[in-house]
Length: 277
Image (cartoon, rainbow, N blue to C red):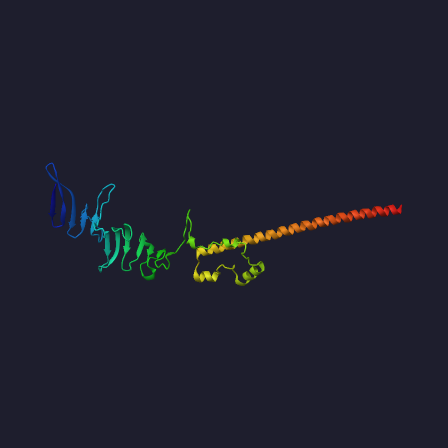
């Protein structure tokens, strides 16, 4: 095998020649076109391979391996590629961090100088990660200007999963079942609902419209209301059982008194009949 450099008016070829019967055969090459376009495994004069402003095209067929490999041998460096804008400002890097401190070796996508990440499908923006001021890192799906850590303009669907909202900090209202918990009297509850048009300790429609909704907190408040409703139902059932028992005692007493009156009437009737004889 021997190295080969061939220059023509239209093409610069850097490659290797392998001995074959009757001469040499070119087995691989880097081709630089007169237009400055570089092809590795592809002809830079092939307009289908170099449409528009494409300057570099790499083509190969290596099953189970990468076509292009990038390595920085410095233990504190980064193995990857950096992209700059027309003014030479760094805007984007992707690659691998070689250092294991302060973080383990990891794959890295990084933007610079306030450049957001914009993910597009069919040239339409699908997701954006902001990189400006206090909104740095805010993620928007369906919106290009997210105002929260995750801002979704559209529906969210969870299948076979859970929505977890800071479970360690949630105030689960099982305190409702403690013996010293005081339920609001029903008369007071009726007056509150008539006056405020919402349940106690539950945000009103105007509050939700102005401040938004904390789903985790609202779930806990709704659970509190369900537990209170359970206590109201149990209390009413207890009172109903007492009424039923009292009604049974009254019925038993009435039946006993009626029986006594009927017995007395029979005795009176018998005595009166004997006197008439």
